[in-house]
View 1 (cartoon, one colour):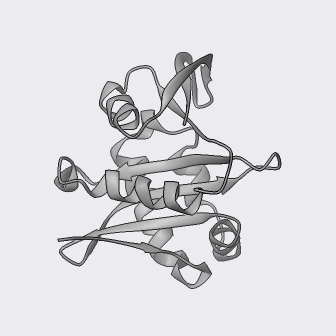
View 2 (tube, one colour; view 1 turned 90 degrees about the vertical axis):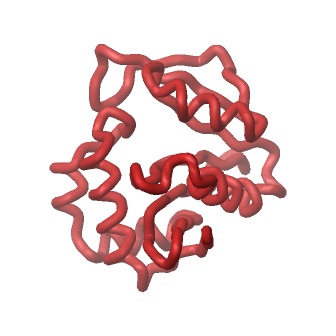
Amino acid sequence: MNEVTLAGPDDWSAYREIRLAALTDAPQAFASTLDRETALTETEWRQRLQNSATFFGYRDGKLLALAVGLPQPDGTAEIVSVWAHPSARGTGLARATIEAVLNWAADRPSVGLWVAEDNPGAEKLYVTLGFRRTGEQQPLPNDPARLEFRLTR
């Protein structure tokens, strides 16, 4: 059974664990790197949780998915750090965590995200949730040889 919860600053250790797992499993999918985030302090992890809406996805009681909503200065929201453990893919858990972010951002004029060009599975999921490409693209920050596309809803 899937369950999604909103994480708070006291959940920093679990957040660190799942974020590092995501960067280990799919380093090509993220703008950050495992080395960069391994070096973060407890204070930095707590601050990230305080400044975001971070949702944990559990399947049968195990933390296996993550999606983060970041409020933007213009009143919109940005979704970042979406990941599901390979054993949870296809179970609806990633979708449920993203939907939790969308519910959190329901009163905002729009929600955006970036998806790597070579991650069609993620883009397909975002499209089923109402996201569309904007036409914006940019080099992926951790690998400028690859592109990422902007989607909004």
